[in-house]
Each structure stands twice: as structure tokens, then as C-alpha cells.
Image (cartoon, rainbow, N blue to C red; front, side, top):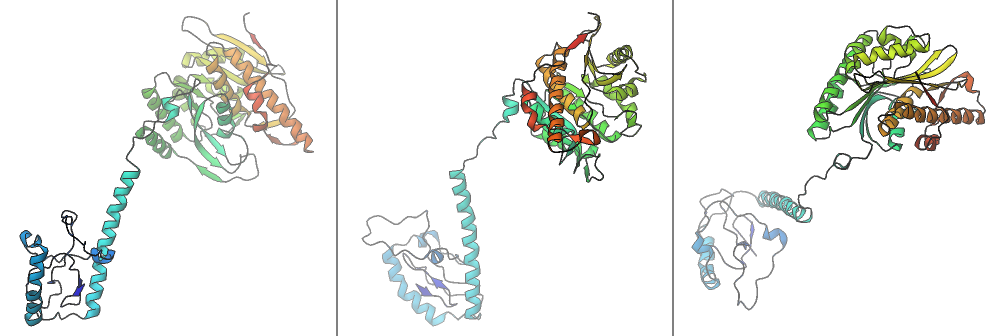
Length: 445
């Protein structure tokens, strides 16, 4: 190791550069350091290999000016040794010293060396990563590549952090019944609106479409079912209709199950203008509708005071589009009924039935969302037997509600004094393997 006229250390393990004199005080005109290249390995037959230099010295920069010719760089060791005295003599006699201070020269040397080390480190890490982690094809989405026997559901509904309404009430039962479920939360609230206060966020139509585009960009839009529940604005509902078109462009056999959440017991939950959008645009594209008594009255304009009124309202909706209509709760003649109607072909009249639902003296939240999810799940297993699917759905729901009432009583609370959060997780056996306790009765039989 020797030091140049500017105070830069240079390595002279194999050859020395040809003699030359710097042009002036420019600190970049430095004697060429000798750096072993990976393109020119040591010649064989040498008795003692040159000493290994420290890592930092091996990474010293090669000055860009006055590089010797390739023939000079390939000088033999003997020629380099013979040239060394004259180089030293000329350098000592004629080469002026650099005007920069030793501190400045050393700072430049450290900075340049660090740059080269950093660059080489990046290249080395990249090469190592490529060797250890070779580029692989993106793994398939198994829910798409190997779909379940039941299907894949996109569920667009409300969501609460605490309690079971909307998606919180629908996703878990569908998963128990074997579906892959991808939820999109139309709203995300701390709790349902029956509490004194609630906080949260509302998803708008543009944000919904952003999610759909993200799925489309990754080829994840193949769904067998679309489930929608509470929707609070016209713009969001219009975007949902675009989602229906988009999903059916991917899968023309998509089953759209719509729970038209508008209100209950004479009270409207949504803006008035949503009713016409449901009537004119949503009903014609739905495969199954699951309104309650108040909602089907809004959709058809018919007043339901008897079972026949309910059947007439179902026929009216069949004319508009959906093959399956289920009135999830209708209070007629002091009886609580579920009324179902399945129009299998255009030529045949619909198959219609009723199920009498036992009354429980309590008010529950999330039961409509749960009923629609159960109807979707069981009607997929029994596509031509809607009454069987309804029997299983109602029987599961009744077992769950009874457990909920019993648990509240066990906790020392009177169930009739307030709305109750359903015991969904504790009732999973009743959802998966229900015992039929509520039988369907066909009309006209």
C-alpha cells in the first residue's frame, strides 16, 4: 500500500500503472490504482498469491482520466516491477502536489467509497434474493379455482362492530352452510341504530365501485350469488345495479337475492325516493325477493290484510321479474305467517305455500337479515323446492330466538322490555343441522 501525491491510498498487489504526471491541482487526476478484475483472475503457476486486501481497499474507485491502454493493464509482474523505480522517480521529481488539504481528500475518498459499497450491496442483495426467492407465478384464488359445492357469495349489507345485523348476521350462517362469502359493508357503525347513540362511516357509490374495480383487475369477480340488504341512498343503489350487470357479464347464471330493506310496521327506514328505484330497476333484475309485509306493500302498492292479498302481491312481483318471492313476516287474522311463491316457468302458475310462525313476546334485531341468508343457503341446496328451504330457514330461526330469550332470562333480564341481540354464535348447531319444527302448507293442495 502506497500513498499518491494527493494522499489517496493506492493498492499495488499485481501491477503498477505506467508513469505519468498529473496535469495540475485537480484532485481527480490521480494515479491509477490497481484493482483486480473478476474478468482477469490470477494466473496459475504463481508460487505465492498476492495478499488479500481489506474490503474497503478493494472497492476504491478507479479515476476516470488517463486510464492506461488495455495492453498496459495486462503487463506481466516482471514488467511492472521494472517500471516501478522510474515511476517513483518521475512522480517525486515532477508531479506537483494537489492543492486540496488532506482532510478534504480523505473526505472525498470516504464518500466515494461508501457510494460504491452501497451500490454493490444493493446489487448483491438483489442477486441473492433472485437466487433464494426465484420469481414464481401468482398462486390461484382457491375459492375461484376450486369453488365449494355451494357457491361464492358477494354480500353488500350494513355492518356493526357490536351486535348481529346486516353482514354480521348473514355472513356467518352462510359460511356454516358451506359458502365462500365476501362481504362489502354499505355502512360500518359502532352498533345498530336502536341504541341511544351510534357512530361510524357510510360507504358511497364511488367507493363501492372502487372495490369492484379492484376485484375485476385481479380477476376475482366470479360469484355465484349476490346478496344485498340495507342500502341508504339512491346513488349507492344505482351503483349496486351496475354491480349486478358487471357480475352477470362474468357469470350469466348469477343468482341475485335481494332483501329490500325499506322499513317495518309502518315506519320507513330509508329516503322515499328509494322506493321507485326498487320498483322500476331492482325488482326486474332480482332472482329472489324477501320483503316483509310493510315492504311488499310499498313495492306493489297493495294493502295486505289477508293471505289472499299476500298471494296476489307475490304474483304482481313475479310479473315484474323475480322467480322466487318470500314474504318473511305477515300478520294476518292474528297469525304470523311466512308466505312463499315460486314461479318455475312462464307457462305454469306459481307454487305457493305458507308457514305459520310461533309468536315470541320479544323484539329482536337482525332477524330479517338472518332469514334472507338462510333462505339463500337452503334454496341453493333445494333449488326446486322453495317450501323445503323455507321450513329449514324458519326452524333454524325459531331455535335461535328461543335460545336468545332463555339466555337473557338466565342473565336476569326481562326479554319483553327491550330489543334483543340474537345469540348467533351459540346457535350454530341449529343453523347447520336444524330440526324442522315449522311445516309448510301448500295452497291449492
